[in-house]
Length: 154
Picture 1 (cartoon, rainbow, N blue to C red):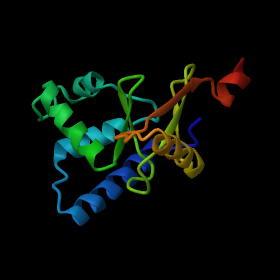
Picture 2 (picture 1 turned 120 degrees about the vertical axis):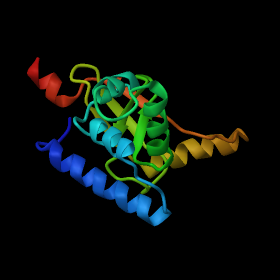
Picture 3 (picture 1 turned 30 degrees about the vertical axis):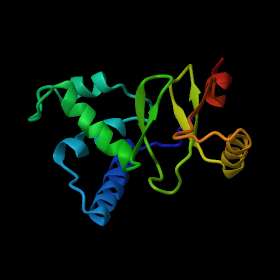
Picture 4 (picture 1 turned 120 degrees about the horizontal axis):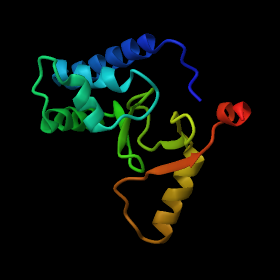
């Protein structure tokens, strides 16, 4: 699904955007946060926290779960990554801070994830919430299936 031919470019773009956001918000973009963000952007596939932990083992960081989870929490809170709840994994956000609600299509064959943003879907969901007098804290839509590339390979 991904149109990326050069993950280094994606990583560099993500790191620059993250640094700009942190500078604007007067936040520290520490080495561990940069490293975790880089690891997430190494491919466009979801990655689990313990896989990130395995990758930082042997680096100069404390290779313990709280180290990774603190970095992930920071990246999530600042809109730099998304958590894919159905997979308990993380992906980079290609357009941080542009909007709050995103939806994901997940290919079960190649594990690629595409982030989709649609105001009509958001408006429909918010309309249902209002009609039912329900206040939501988060909207997460994840659709699992097979992408066109994988369908064409069969």
